[in-house]
Length: 400
Image: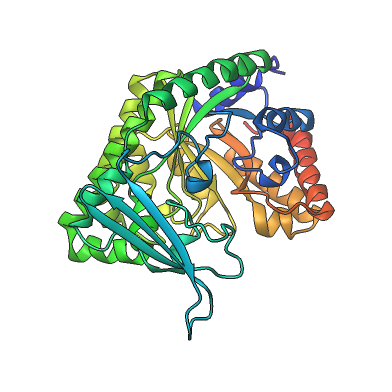
């Protein structure tokens, strides 16, 4: 039996495609547990109590504007200092829901958005800048044409000196905490052309990629440069793994040809940036990844986060393992919503067993429900514990 490793060592062994003392289990997102904790440090400690391979995700202290971009946690999103914002709500005759309006007044012009405040809208009368809720509820997106990109630049300012200083202070404390507990340090959440889904509309950006490729290339370049400045701050902190989100970049939306044209070039440059800084690169894509596996290898991707055998369109664990073994670490293996939140304990255990038997041989696998456990009911918590227990039971399984 191999000598027991620290959690960080175990995670790194998986990322480097080597078999560790046992398969690590690290929940990629765990909102149900996080909601029970007073801060992010307690959140990590609670995961350790369960026995999970938790990570320390920089920054550990939330920013003062995180509510305005909760879907890309990390550094604050700041605007040019001359930007002025106006928001209001109207009750309109014939409209099913109240209508929210927001204007960003910049030196180059005004960008405005109009959003339906549906019954499940979580932000009151406020319209956040970047948020998944915007995509299906927007009557008018911020960006409507190529000319708006010049105005958008004022809303995509690089991190301020104050933000960087605060981040570095937070990182020093967090790194000491990680070293004490032997934990992997992650950072991000980076974003590329996916941000256009919030700013321009998901359907709109796909159509534009075919009809106005020059506009989309300029859009992608603008977002890449903005993300690059933010990414540099994380890499300078000495993280182990930089994570970029790509939920809306899979082939559920983008064809492989469009992906290669508009997403691949910037993704490859970001991966190279991470490697030059001594960090690994993780990419979140929970569906539509199968046709892109060869492209991921070509880009030099280290970790594919969000391998979902149930809701991931076309995901075949066996084929994915065969194509990526020794090349890209796979993180996931069990569906979070259908299996853990809605399934039986028997189904949960079977899913864990199947994931480990299929994805663990030869190393390069981190077990997780995909992509989140949100439900706080006792039934779901019992299934979470069933998953953890099944994972612990499999530690002695001869996977080689």
